[in-house]
Length: 166
Length: 386
Image (tube, rainbow over the protein chains, first blue to last red):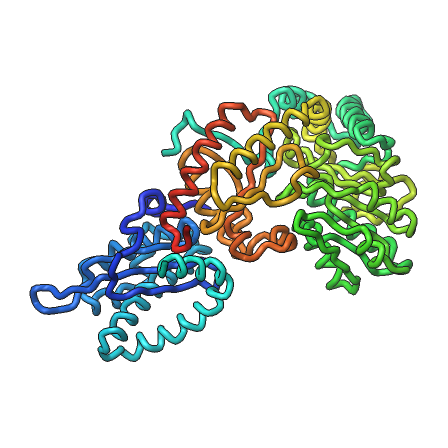
């Protein structure tokens, strides 16, 4: 198994990692396949045309090389896009932008894609906007999977959330 | 990043380079002394003698007779043979075998296969250090038990089982005892007679010999069927044209390995463990603190994933391995780490560092300098952190 040069670049020098202090919304997802976890923070603002865009985006990921590289790539792809454009980013676009992923690692691109969808879902929810039907459907699937993974990391998650509140 | 000047191999438990002295011993047996050991003419006799010499070296190393040493192509073959061969030849006595929960995949999957063929398999549990429980073993042995197989030095966490005590229990119960000594052979003294071992697996490529050679020690009088039927090589027990160069290399490798200083290796091992546990917060040792292979280090770090640690180290030119789910073709964490009671996320953040004959103090110093940086960096990226 070998990673592409692009994957290694994003893994070794990931773009946009860390927290956003006062995020508009957060997407927290877990991968039932391998147990990786990704948290994605977005800051939404309006552009000149009055459309809502992803002004800033940051990630935190517990996972393998591919998980970290796809996290980094999705922040690049989503930054500056309108929410509709961001929702249109698909797995294939992430994988292609990274110069491909080993077949066994393709599920990592789902994680990044889900995290972005969850962040936007969270934003719509918070700002009481109408949620598109397919996003709602995606959210249902992700929530079920997240519960499975969160159970695994209960101790760490509680520790982390306790730390945030303190 | 992975520049030529920095290529540090710390994955000796996966495989070892062929020692130049081993290679030199092998060379004449490719083109010059190439004969088939089964041939009656002089082309056959020289390689035949070389193989018999290697057989003597193996026998001497474990206190066996040469006619109890059977060369195979790998430890995987030896382990398959031990389980399937004993199962097949002793099914009149019973169809129950016992293995531990931390066996190598080739033992686990051979047992799984036997299960599909109508045999019953009991699995011995291990404690948090990866150690089996002798009382549990006594309780599992039944009238129809034909074989107990327990790995000697574990390939992932390095835990060494008290095989003499296990074997004694088996002897008293009149059950064959097999041990997979792929990692421990030449590192820990073994005497098959004193230790009451009936079958033992060893491998060449873990001790600076070539790949493609192993052996199975089979105590005289043991009822076992062949795995490979054919021209009757290896005293009729293992047919296949004899891989002379590899076996000659294996012989030389054993001679050299027996002279290695295991105490010195263990001192380096403990130095690295101490340095990691001191320098890196929330780092832990997997496996047994003292009953441990001299070259094995297995550590875990909270909040990071092992494959990313491996790849980050790879960027610095350091090669290690991991029991993380992310690196496994099945995307499941190591069964050995889970058997020790580690939770999924703990197994996820584990790496194995294994030292070898050519490991230098500079390499060790470099590793212990780089590793804390790598963990710190990955923790910055991780959502879980302190």
